[in-house]
Image 1 (cartoon, rainbow, N blue to C red):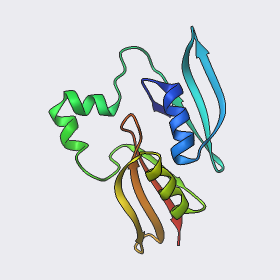
Image 2 (image 1 turned 180 degrees about the vertical axis):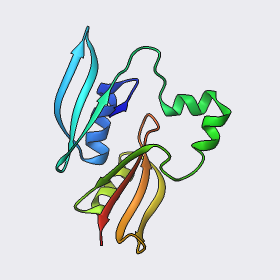
Image 3 (image 1 turned 60 degrees about the horizontal axis):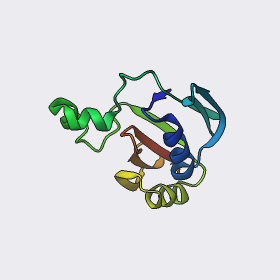
Image 4 (image 1 turned 30 degrees about the vertical axis):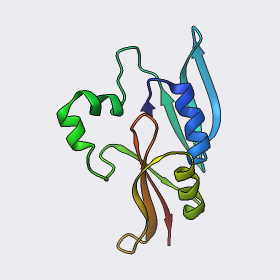
Length: 131
């Protein structure tokens, strides 16, 4: 489960950019508080923990330490997702405005194609497809 400041907008973007399918949306007092997203056989949950929550982008803007640990292209804290067509997935994410952290590459050491991306609130994702 990942937390978002604006769960509804984030879920819509995740579906458009990363190809998730929405499987349930919950609201409270007119605010989207939780969305279930399907990724193949898996589920990713997006939630809003409350008004004091700040996403990784806002942490990066306000905190030198966060800016430094988010300066790397690696997935520091994030989600690893296997996809069926990594090339199509990469093209879709890039066209949707995902911040691409590492280009599509063949990683022979672990036997997969992979790339890393950041979503609209700064969460990091690694998408992969076995060779």
